Amino acid sequence: MRIAAIVARFDGLRETDVLGWVERGWVRPEDGMVFEDIDIARIGLIHELIFRMDLREDAIPLILSLLDQVYELRGSLRSVLRAIETQPAPVRETILAAIR
Image 1 (spheres, rainbow, N blue to C red):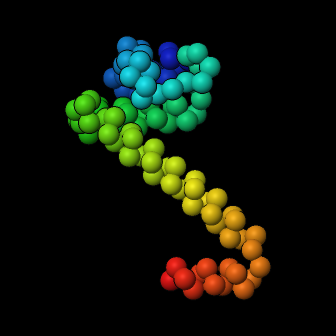
Image 2 (image 1 turned 90 degrees about the horizontal axis):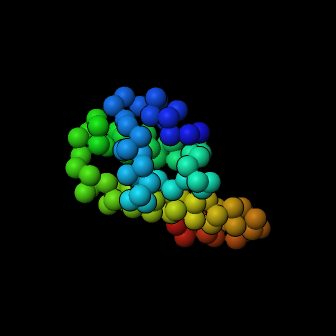
């Protein structure tokens, strides 16, 4: 999706806002200035934080960093879960007993 279409989706959002967020590294479109669903979701989050929650822009990098860490952790935990699921039943039971 291009910037013009994204701007039309969010009240008060301007192209300069999106371009500034890309410059700051808050949004990282993969292919030039074509935005994927994940980029649009991130733009929506930033828009919410700034325009609706009235957070200062200097707080945004910290919030995004923390959320990125949470998503990375969730991905790692999913990988661990998949690895556990491939183990024989006695091993799975031992692991479950250890974390309860």
